Length: 186
Image 1: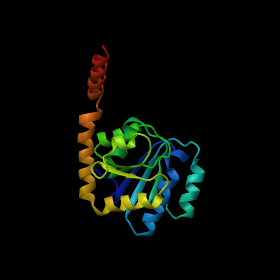
Image 2: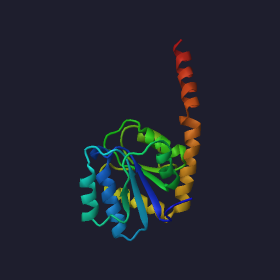
Image 3: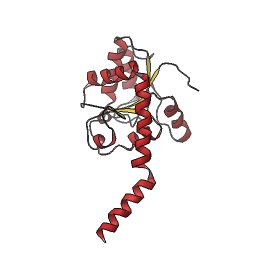
Image 4: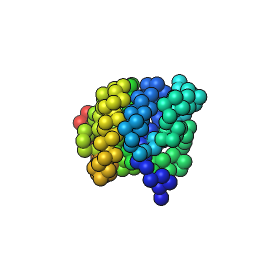
């Protein structure tokens, strides 16, 4: 059961500049100014962005009512956030193949991430989520707003993401692909 009826945006990563924390906060600021009803939950270990600096940003931009930082969560504690999420966001600046996007797909949550590394091989644009330019809070806010305005589409992207995860990213599929590669080499 959901604790909050607002559209639920979820960020799960270390609280680092290169993970796009400030970009997502800027997007939240844009969305709030435009009157959207949402909550954005940040879950992750404090790192080069500290709790006080984060709180100061929230206060300066009057985001305390829509953005919440929960610190690091693991196991069942983290699972609760996945169950509440309508949309997962990873506006990273430096990534190879972020497994957290696979985790979102496994949970049937649509994703928006920046155009970085192997993200384009994970997210199918417009099918399982959206890819936005790096460090572009306005583009991110516009895609999030579109998802809020089209919740059925957002849920369908999450469903398709779950199907893609099952077809391409399970441990069994990894093992099958690895065996195929090894057979070809021998």
